[in-house]
Image (tube, rainbow, N blue to C red):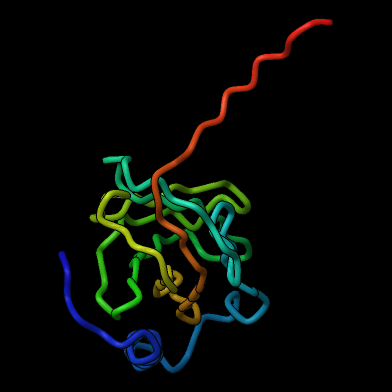
Length: 150
């Protein structure tokens, strides 16, 4: 699924919607600090993707301090279009979770990309995390070196 959206507007509207759903939270929510971390694509990083690969774009993430819920994930291209990705579990803490997106690696191009992860976080305060990174997309070059003896 592909739809046009401006990155900041997506993050802002998703968070506004989630916050509007609940203005009070159960007592156990106030001692939590839900966080999400990118494992293979981290905020501010630069990464290579092989344009000859027909594999779908995937990203690993982990959550800590979150409720037993699922996160919705979206890949956003440099033009602001968004691509749905699979949901990821937010529990147990620190367990790497793989999200697979509806865009193949051979459909990527070089530029500034983002992954958004958002959730109602159970009955607690909703979360919305954005990881921005640069992709360099090209043909992978392989160099084979054979040592020779003297």
